Length: 496
Image (tube, rainbow, N blue to C red):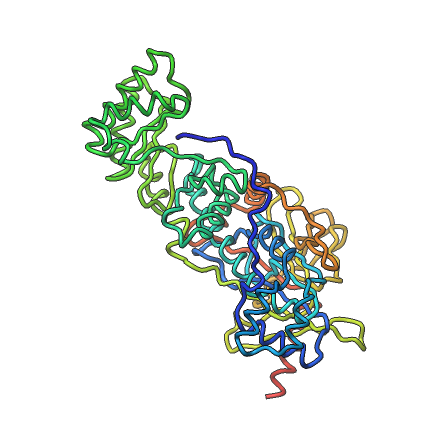
């Protein structure tokens, strides 16, 4: 497929997004302002259930969250619009005129493997600031994490075959296409057809040609010859316009012979199948190509692919070596939402000089939140390097590989694992992104995040990466956090 060298990203592709929020964030802000409430609080952005039936998710979108927070201010046009809504008083609008973010943000780095209930982003800031940020953070993180997780499944199904993201024309608008392509590449796709995403994020752009190219010429052979002359270094010919096995593949072979004789046949040449029984056609095409001496010819496939169809084709031994995946990946067709939420976890108590943990109680067990100012520790086996569990604790707690560590299931508490010093290593997942309103984190390049994501996936056991009924990861609570959560729930129950 034609591969273009990515151009540098533009100096700025950012839009002003302060009003990318739900109205109730602003009405609550005004309520806090009118009530004289300016205390620091802790909000956690997390999700409750893995998408697509997966055992994990891939967190994505942090760079765009950083851009949003850096640019968080109200313009004169914003204030004029809010005044026209009829809900906001002049003193509150005057307060917004000089509004800036002055708090702290912590986040798990993009490309990380993550699990339900653990904070992906933690905001520690005055309540008016932290409240405003809810909608935009969820909008950005939810979308990109969803597409990254879906793309990870597709790439896993393809095994060693490269997956190209081809979904721009089917995405739900330009932003979904652009940032979905970014997320898909982070999760392991080798490139995208989206040229603007390629420019913005310095990621490989790839593509072949459409059926219209073939149909615009007097005949298929002339179309192939013309394309091969223009792009000899990446000549992938679409062979299903008229008749795949009687016309397309034979004409492709004829052009490849002519290129070989002329000395222009380069590595990376091949054919693309975009319709029909891909298992049958790829096997027949492989035989025809091999018989003609083109054993290194790529067979690429597209046509409404997803991880399940790719896995089925692999199980049928379809000799497909490259995959173009569009609609079902860029829209995450079978699981169209990520389900991330943003919940208050703690409020600063001036008298105590500490955060008071807060909890949301619900009749739905999965909606009960973990209280307090927290962090996340990842526990690995020292010899295997594989994930043992994640441990959520209060931020002032520490976990040392030089001390005994007891892990227990926060629901089935009798399920316990005792780790001894020297058996495990520890990594704190939440990293400081903003301190006192200043960004202290530099986002890596997308292709570097992609490499990091691959390393993250290598820490998972194979059973956790199964597409169907995967082994779930353990996300445990520290004893102190577990006890505090139970005490708060019991106290709330007594108030009823």
